[in-house]
Image 1 (cartoon, chains in turn green, blue):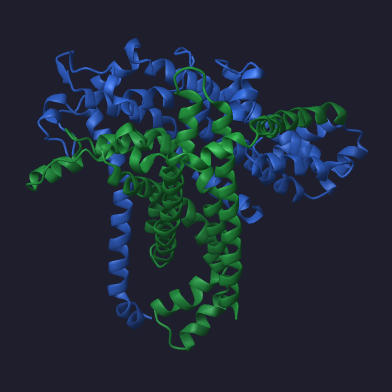
Image 2: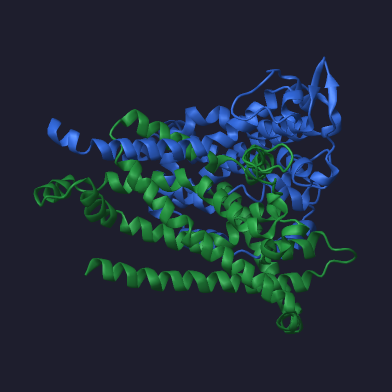
Length: 279
Length: 292
């Protein structure tokens, strides 16, 4: 019986490895030509710059916000209220990027969106947010916070729940108020999960949000929104004539390298950070 | 105790206010879109719909679902089929693989697990993926939504961790009774592991329903497209929006009404099941994060 079950697993492995295998073979016939071409392509610089800025922003702006939200949520006294807030903030995590971006289009619509209605009522001029390069990053970051808020809260709240209650009592004896307890007990208590989440979020930047970027991307905001993924996607699926697969793959390899380097850096930093925390 | 409560009262008030605001910001966009979808287009075009619906009706919903020109009905049906079929297959495959990988009898099980982890960590990128899948005949084939994602390594790890936590005595008694693996799985494991089955089923269902890149890459036939693709086409590619302002059953429908109704439809199933199943989501995330 087991030998009937095993191929089921084996089949899927072969399947998933298959794409990775072709990737390796693909990069072989790419040769160095494509990489050379990339180095001389001035547009590559813009792409890499956009990708890195977006990556850094989505850690620097999003991450502290998520931790602070969880810390404050933990301080809420009424359990029912706490539960409601948690459920409400968790919902966007399960909604697709297509829906979230569509909602942004509706809310920010230059003709009928609520934001522009308010701007016009206050005497301003309506802004076509989706077509402005300078608005791409704020919108992206807002979506990131919006979708990740509840997810992170779940993880941090579980971390907070496992903190030894005696620590709080000790802090109270030492004269700590609620602020003090939050900063001296709760925050160190969840520092391991915070660091873990930080590493995961840095590692994931390049893989997870392709959907959102593709959906937010358009020709008018390309100056900031065109990142490596959207570029590769366009090469593969939207170019006229025969798509330049090998060049796209080469660009993609650079992306993977960048992601890998980021993960390594994050890991090093976490090591350092955790140590200074501990001692 | 009361003295302390009074001392921290300002903190409580400020904290509650801030969090309420955050929660409101989280929900308002959803509510706003919902209100637009049920409002009268006339008020909408005059900019009179902001925080409350005006001229409530469900014509936009009806129009969006029934009018074949928008292919939203088709998209919804397709997504539903992919999700149901995909979830059933994904749960079966993931569960059986996890079962096999937790049997001490199986040689190479660590090696097999490593292979799974490799597929998770290293991504080939969309172009090699596209080339590989097209050579397997996945272009315009609904199975592209179902087979490649059938065993997600993260969910496999979660399931494996859960199965490893079961007491060994459970199956030993059954083996003494002469039960084979199928009987053990069906009669003993499945009944006691219902929570983990629910968890991976929900995670798979949500991820299949929400897929955008995969169908966009492989499903070009408009009869096969998912609701997310259709939605992205009518709203994000707004230049050739199929919606026009029309009069239906004496109600003026603005194209924004119909867009809003389309958005609501694309998230409807998730919003409907969410209140009942969020505890499984929380549990799944926690197991996954501890292991990962």
